[in-house]
Image 1 (cartoon, rainbow over the protein chains, first blue to last red):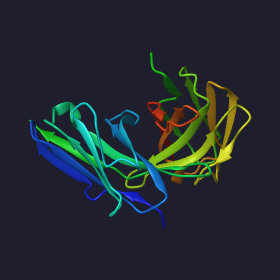
Image 2 (image 1 turned 90 degrees about the vertical axis):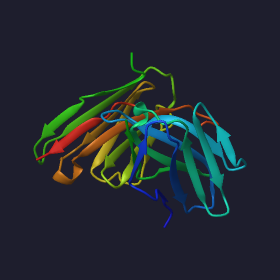
Image 3 (image 1 turned 180 degrees about the vertical axis):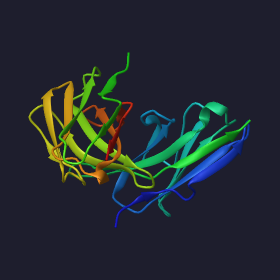
Image 4 (image 1 turned 90 degrees about the horizontal axis):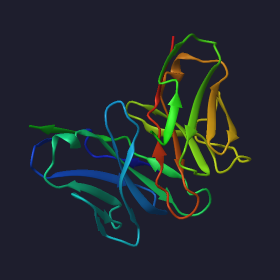
Amino acid sequence: GESVGLHLPTLSVQEGDNSIINCAYSNSASDYFIWYKQESGKGPQFIIDIRSNMDKRQGQRVTVLLNKTVKHLSLQIAATQPGDSAVYFCADKTSGGYQKVTFGTGTKLQVIP
Amino acid sequence: DADVTQTPRNRITKTGKRIMLECSQTKGHDRMYWYRQDPGLGLRLIYYSFDVKDINKGEISDGYSVSRQAQAKFSLSLESAIPNQTALYFCATSEAGGTYEQYFGPGTRLTVT
Protein backbone atom coordinates (compact mmCIF):
# COMPACT_ATOMS: atom_id res chain seq x y z
CA GLY A 1 0.00 0.00 0.00
CA GLU A 2 0.95 3.64 -0.09
CA SER A 3 3.03 4.77 2.82
CA VAL A 4 5.38 7.39 4.03
CA GLY A 5 7.87 6.16 6.55
CA LEU A 6 11.16 6.88 8.22
CA HIS A 7 14.27 4.70 8.29
CA LEU A 8 15.26 5.26 11.91
CA PRO A 9 12.99 5.83 14.92
CA THR A 10 15.65 7.59 17.03
CA LEU A 11 18.68 9.68 16.10
CA SER A 12 21.20 10.96 18.64
CA VAL A 13 23.46 13.81 17.55
CA GLN A 14 26.12 15.81 19.32
CA GLU A 15 25.36 19.49 19.71
CA GLY A 16 26.97 21.41 16.89
CA ASP A 17 27.04 18.50 14.49
CA ASN A 18 24.82 18.20 11.45
CA SER A 19 21.74 15.97 11.57
CA ILE A 20 20.27 14.02 8.70
CA ILE A 21 16.79 12.57 8.99
CA ASN A 22 15.60 10.30 6.21
CA CYS A 23 12.18 9.51 4.82
CA ALA A 24 10.99 7.06 2.19
CA TYR A 25 7.76 7.34 0.30
CA SER A 26 6.09 4.84 -1.96
CA ASN A 27 3.50 6.82 -3.91
CA SER A 28 4.85 7.83 -7.30
CA ALA A 29 1.94 10.29 -7.59
CA SER A 30 3.28 12.33 -4.68
CA ASP A 31 4.09 15.81 -5.91
CA TYR A 32 4.71 17.76 -2.73
CA PHE A 33 6.55 17.00 0.48
CA ILE A 34 6.63 18.67 3.87
CA TRP A 35 8.75 18.26 6.97
CA TYR A 36 7.22 18.88 10.37
CA LYS A 37 8.79 19.21 13.80
CA GLN A 38 6.87 18.15 16.89
CA GLU A 39 8.19 19.14 20.28
CA SER A 40 7.04 17.35 23.38
CA GLY A 41 3.51 18.39 24.36
CA LYS A 42 2.96 20.45 21.23
CA GLY A 43 1.37 20.09 17.85
CA PRO A 44 3.43 19.57 14.71
CA GLN A 45 5.04 22.66 13.26
CA PHE A 46 5.92 23.23 9.62
CA ILE A 47 9.64 23.36 8.88
CA ILE A 48 10.12 23.29 5.14
CA ASP A 49 8.49 21.95 2.00
CA ILE A 50 9.58 20.93 -1.46
CA ARG A 51 7.75 20.30 -4.69
CA SER A 52 8.50 17.29 -6.83
CA ASN A 53 9.99 19.43 -9.60
CA MET A 54 12.83 20.36 -7.25
CA ASP A 55 15.78 18.35 -5.91
CA LYS A 56 16.83 20.62 -3.11
CA ARG A 57 15.47 23.43 -1.03
CA GLN A 58 17.18 25.39 1.72
CA GLY A 59 15.79 27.22 4.69
CA GLN A 60 17.33 28.62 7.80
CA ARG A 61 19.78 25.89 8.97
CA VAL A 62 17.67 23.26 7.22
CA THR A 63 17.92 21.68 3.79
CA VAL A 64 15.57 19.19 2.23
CA LEU A 65 16.81 16.89 -0.51
CA LEU A 66 14.48 14.96 -2.76
CA ASN A 67 15.48 11.93 -4.81
CA LYS A 68 12.51 10.93 -6.90
CA THR A 69 14.37 8.05 -8.50
CA VAL A 70 14.48 6.13 -5.24
CA LYS A 71 11.52 7.89 -3.62
CA HIS A 72 13.57 9.28 -0.79
CA LEU A 73 13.84 12.61 0.92
CA SER A 74 16.00 13.85 3.72
CA LEU A 75 16.07 16.72 6.14
CA GLN A 76 19.45 18.11 7.02
CA ILE A 77 19.84 20.32 10.07
CA ALA A 78 23.08 22.25 10.27
CA ALA A 79 24.83 22.89 13.60
CA THR A 80 22.23 21.02 15.60
CA GLN A 81 21.14 22.77 18.78
CA PRO A 82 19.41 21.50 21.93
CA GLY A 83 16.24 23.25 20.78
CA ASP A 84 16.20 20.97 17.76
CA SER A 85 15.37 18.00 19.97
CA ALA A 86 11.95 16.84 18.81
CA VAL A 87 10.18 14.31 16.64
CA TYR A 88 10.50 15.03 12.94
CA PHE A 89 8.22 13.57 10.35
CA CYS A 90 7.67 13.95 6.69
CA ALA A 91 4.40 14.17 4.84
CA ASP A 92 3.58 13.81 1.19
CA LYS A 93 0.71 14.99 -0.93
CA THR A 94 -0.66 13.13 -3.88
CA SER A 95 -1.67 14.98 -7.00
CA GLY A 96 -5.27 15.10 -8.12
CA GLY A 97 -8.56 14.55 -6.32
CA TYR A 98 -8.62 15.50 -2.65
CA GLN A 99 -4.87 15.85 -2.71
CA LYS A 100 -4.48 13.77 0.40
CA VAL A 101 -1.60 14.51 2.72
CA THR A 102 -0.09 11.41 4.33
CA PHE A 103 2.13 11.69 7.39
CA GLY A 104 5.01 9.43 8.30
CA THR A 105 5.54 7.96 11.74
CA GLY A 106 8.40 10.19 12.85
CA THR A 107 12.04 10.12 13.95
CA LYS A 108 13.01 11.33 17.38
CA LEU A 109 16.07 13.56 17.31
CA GLN A 110 18.02 13.71 20.56
CA VAL A 111 20.69 16.38 20.82
CA ILE A 112 23.51 15.54 23.19
CA PRO A 113 24.94 18.68 24.87
CA ASP B 1 -2.29 34.11 21.37
CA ALA B 2 -2.36 30.73 19.68
CA ASP B 3 -3.81 30.64 16.18
CA VAL B 4 -5.35 27.18 16.64
CA THR B 5 -6.73 26.27 20.04
CA GLN B 6 -8.18 23.03 21.31
CA THR B 7 -10.30 22.30 24.34
CA PRO B 8 -9.98 20.41 26.54
CA ARG B 9 -6.23 19.71 26.58
CA ASN B 10 -6.65 16.58 28.60
CA ARG B 11 -9.69 14.40 29.22
CA ILE B 12 -10.28 11.12 30.96
CA THR B 13 -13.60 9.48 30.33
CA LYS B 14 -15.31 6.13 30.70
CA THR B 15 -16.31 3.67 28.05
CA GLY B 16 -19.69 4.50 26.52
CA LYS B 17 -19.62 8.21 27.31
CA ARG B 18 -20.13 10.86 24.64
CA ILE B 19 -17.21 13.23 24.29
CA MET B 20 -16.79 16.42 22.30
CA LEU B 21 -13.44 17.96 21.45
CA GLU B 22 -13.48 21.52 20.24
CA CYS B 23 -11.20 23.43 17.91
CA SER B 24 -11.12 27.14 17.17
CA GLN B 25 -8.85 29.07 14.81
CA THR B 26 -8.09 32.71 14.21
CA LYS B 27 -6.10 32.18 11.02
CA GLY B 28 -9.08 32.74 8.75
CA HIS B 29 -8.47 29.45 6.98
CA ASP B 30 -11.28 27.67 5.20
CA ARG B 31 -9.89 24.17 5.63
CA MET B 32 -9.92 22.32 8.92
CA TYR B 33 -8.90 18.79 9.89
CA TRP B 34 -9.05 16.35 12.77
CA TYR B 35 -6.27 13.81 13.26
CA ARG B 36 -5.40 11.25 15.87
CA GLN B 37 -1.85 10.36 16.76
CA ASP B 38 -0.88 7.01 18.18
CA PRO B 39 2.67 5.84 18.97
CA GLY B 40 4.24 4.24 15.91
CA LEU B 41 1.33 5.09 13.63
CA GLY B 42 1.82 8.76 12.91
CA LEU B 43 -1.03 11.14 12.26
CA ARG B 44 -4.17 9.64 10.78
CA LEU B 45 -6.95 11.74 9.32
CA ILE B 46 -10.38 11.36 10.91
CA TYR B 47 -12.44 14.06 9.18
CA TYR B 48 -11.82 17.17 7.16
CA SER B 49 -13.83 20.18 6.07
CA PHE B 50 -13.01 22.55 3.24
CA ASP B 51 -15.68 25.09 4.18
CA VAL B 52 -18.64 25.48 6.51
CA LYS B 53 -20.95 23.36 4.38
CA ASP B 54 -18.40 20.69 3.56
CA ILE B 55 -17.67 17.59 5.68
CA ASN B 56 -15.61 14.63 4.49
CA LYS B 57 -14.56 11.36 6.06
CA GLY B 58 -10.90 10.62 6.46
CA GLU B 59 -9.24 7.24 6.72
CA ILE B 60 -10.50 6.39 10.24
CA SER B 61 -13.90 8.05 10.67
CA ASP B 62 -15.76 5.12 12.24
CA GLY B 63 -16.89 5.96 15.77
CA TYR B 64 -16.43 9.71 15.23
CA SER B 65 -18.55 12.57 13.96
CA VAL B 66 -17.82 16.24 13.36
CA SER B 67 -19.58 19.55 13.16
CA ARG B 68 -18.36 22.68 11.41
CA GLN B 69 -20.28 25.35 13.26
CA ALA B 70 -18.52 28.28 11.63
CA GLN B 71 -15.43 28.96 9.57
CA ALA B 72 -13.46 29.21 12.79
CA LYS B 73 -14.89 26.24 14.67
CA PHE B 74 -14.69 22.51 14.02
CA SER B 75 -15.67 20.02 16.71
CA LEU B 76 -15.06 16.29 16.94
CA SER B 77 -17.43 13.97 18.79
CA LEU B 78 -17.02 10.45 20.01
CA GLU B 79 -20.57 9.19 20.26
CA SER B 80 -19.77 6.28 22.55
CA ALA B 81 -16.15 6.27 23.60
CA ILE B 82 -14.18 3.02 23.64
CA PRO B 83 -10.70 2.33 25.05
CA ASN B 84 -9.02 2.05 21.64
CA GLN B 85 -9.95 5.68 21.02
CA THR B 86 -7.39 6.61 23.65
CA ALA B 87 -4.99 8.81 21.70
CA LEU B 88 -3.68 12.30 21.12
CA TYR B 89 -6.06 14.31 18.93
CA PHE B 90 -4.99 17.23 16.80
CA CYS B 91 -6.95 19.84 14.96
CA ALA B 92 -5.30 21.55 12.01
CA THR B 93 -6.10 24.25 9.48
CA SER B 94 -4.82 25.18 6.07
CA GLU B 95 -5.45 27.72 3.38
CA ALA B 96 -7.36 26.82 0.27
CA GLY B 97 -5.31 26.80 -2.88
CA GLY B 98 -1.77 25.85 -3.71
CA THR B 99 -0.21 25.68 -0.26
CA TYR B 100 -0.61 22.52 1.76
CA GLU B 101 1.04 23.60 4.97
CA GLN B 102 -1.17 22.72 7.90
CA TYR B 103 -1.21 24.60 11.18
CA PHE B 104 -1.80 22.38 14.17
CA GLY B 105 -3.35 23.01 17.53
CA PRO B 106 -1.64 21.89 20.75
CA GLY B 107 -3.56 18.62 20.91
CA THR B 108 -6.02 16.95 23.24
CA ARG B 109 -4.91 13.90 25.16
CA LEU B 110 -7.94 11.64 25.54
CA THR B 111 -7.98 8.58 27.75
CA VAL B 112 -10.93 6.21 27.68
CA THR B 113 -11.05 3.80 30.62
